[in-house]
Length: 103
Image (tube, rainbow, N blue to C red; front, side, top):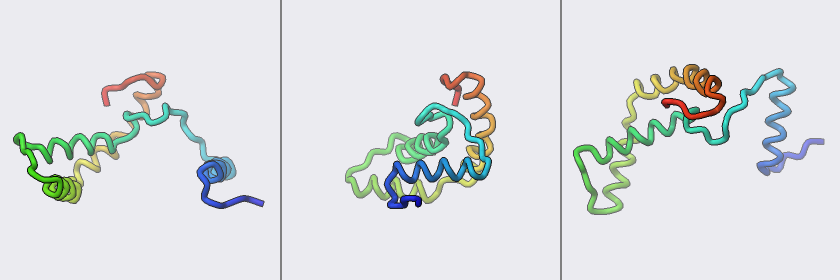
């Protein structure tokens, strides 16, 4: 009987079992590798947009609004570029044995 109480340890085990049962091979990669996490590039883009031209905010609400507006306007082309870069990112991480890449 499988325990399914949504505890992280049980979900991780069930996920691993699913991959094994379905013959899905997983790649080993460094934990929390920013090279394999394109969201880091989006955060960088957003920070540059929010503070473009040295913009400073007088209130937390103004900053929050700018962040939400920027998030709502992430260009599709940026998302497509980041998604299409994943094979190259994986290749470079593998070639560097998990070491730093230019991403």
